[in-house]
Image (cartoon, rainbow, N blue to C red):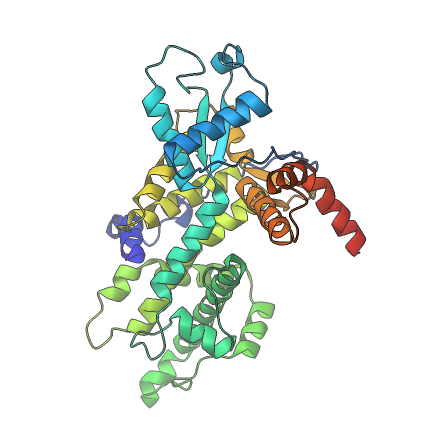
Length: 399
């Protein structure tokens, strides 16, 4: 189970920590590294390529079509020996590219040995597959004997069917589920705080005046409106004990164990890396991205059928978070993985997602072709090169 592997990694040395230690010494926060220039970017798609990218031969043909035919770079060009080219794709594409580099690595030709090529795992494909990993782990079904499952939560609060293959649907589900559970933790802290205040009364009477009642949202709004910095720090330290220390909850006595609460905590642990990754992408924060990639790597390492994601994430960490690459190259790999067409500081999104949106437009065009007067290859070739202009024109006309 992903949560078990992650908590073992996070808390293997937790017994050596002193509760009086500074939290920043136990979990150092990443350094903020964001681009200073947010000028809107324009990108020109390449022409359509009718090749099977799921095979090694098809991948090699696509590389030749891109660099030799469309970019007009010859085999003898000096750029192959002096420059590096980043190629983004999903896990299957990058795996094929790594295989191509291994097979051609002994060649003495600068172009033929493919040393100029750096396969980079697309961040949108990482987000999509991580969402699927969480949903599959916590989805469950009707009348499941486990608690806090996505199926039950979705049925109770959204009252409509959920297609786990739809990325936006799954994204919204995870964000709302995370917020609901963090809100519940805050309410539990407030209940615990009130119990501490009336501890003497509880000892005398034999029961807490609060009983089993949990403070409601109105009480929480009042508390946040009147609290100070010390109160917030106390809440954070309490939440750190309750949320971070899953082993403590697991190792309670049988009479004190709360499987439902444990399941909530595991879900929070699993969603947290995804939210950090999404925020890092949105703001192009390299420091936060390194932090998120490491956490998602630990999660994928706990799965048996996603070993290729583990390998690609290790390679990505090697590129942006190790001494294998200079800081300028690390920034190039991370920031070239993103695109910002709005010019806003929080307007970044994944480059491979932009390609997938282009593919969606092409599929729409293909499905709308009613006659055989225009060859499909010619149609896709023309539309691919003008897609950005036509998309902007459509947005202007829709206003």
